Length: 109
Length: 498
Image (cartoon, rainbow over all chains, first blue to last red; front, top):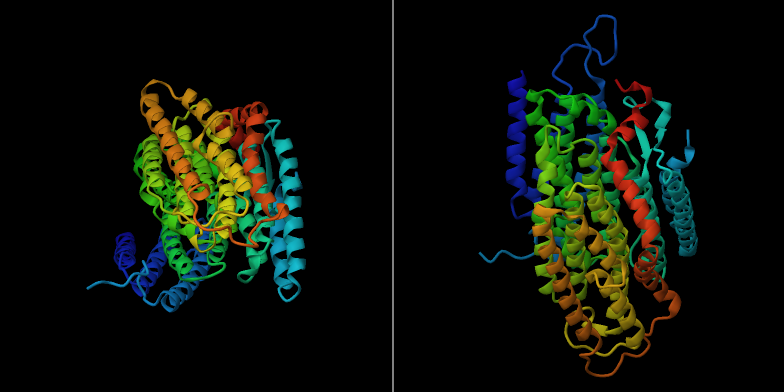
């Protein structure tokens, strides 16, 4: 299970990094979303992988760490807001600069 | 518990919300709210500075939850100094913006207090995840402020800035997740204890997160490989916003200083971050100086000078001794205020030169060359570090702080950087004020009230030089406090320390 979780995060980060390094804003925004998914999963898993246990101190002993769940909730909200902002900004840049390159310069090729 | 500590966060938040309600009202109402809030924040910051000067570290437990479980705000000498600096910078910048720049876009008076909230929060918080949240608050406000006034140039630079910082935020969260996974806490004082008591098999993970944090804060502070976003952005945003952004790189410097001095000391499991700082700082300083020389616009030149000042600051911190950190903390307010003043002055100069603007090429003579020229001379002397102004005092303190192996590198780079800045600023001044053609543009003369904010910020350099005694006494005490993190940890965790 740990290996699978690590693999999922690794693939997401790999794809995200690749897309972020593209020159057009659409792929960059997609890459940022993938990166933020990876980061959210990573934060969530930082409390260890425990299934079927409540995030509360109970008498039975086995509990899931509640803090990463709170952290990931905050990170998701912030990431969502930022992604929305960058989408609008990218659209605006397309309208104002006239192309969708991150540098705002038209590709010569 | 001392409830004053939360006020630098609550006041701007309330002011921002109030201004949101006043959007449909006259702009005068919003201006009054913003100005009043910033002034009151300055008063409270001075009050907190007076309390922190005693050396006692005060904490504020949010929701009254004790330290490692709840979020704490911590007021020590460094936080108080940064709070006062932020307020001292914000007031003139806001006054300048109220002369018309705030009307060139929407919601300036909503965003400005929120920006202050984020900056103050980053300086006060004692929790690493909370630091991330305040970083995001100050970033989202800065994204919107960077777009204020609009135009393709601004959009292009803002897009780059936003994308880079979103990647930075992702790295920040990965570092936080790693730290939490290893230590099980995110309270900075608690982390310091856990990192100091970590086992050797945890060291690689801690080292990775320390280096990730350094890169994230390095991106905010604009150190060498991560500084290319800054010149374009600072040169394209509105002058008042650029002046406010003078504090933004210092937030990164603060975060580096705080995390490295408290959590990852050089004896700990992650010595690289502290050791890397000095060479990186010198490289930033050198590269920044070269680029200052190659600038073709006044504001691009000033933006590169901001990077040079970041390099100087981090070189002092990278020495990791009391004198070095103290020198940096003296240089920090100086460079922030002077650079902000020069950005505002560049605005006035550009307006008087008509279409030539701040391009460094012959243009029409200004209507008030003597007044603006004198202020530019003062600012340039401060920025280049000429005696008798504060830049000189800061540089001398810094050079004195370096001992044998590091001094060999620091002296030539820092002095060479000063020389290059001097040459560039001299060339720039002669181009702006002497190489003129045509006749002055009519009706561009600036009245004293409009010029006052820029003049006040530049004259702060003179004030800092006059008050060098008390200020260095304070920064030395701050450096001592930073290098003995035990007091910080004890103050935050109280009796909970093992």
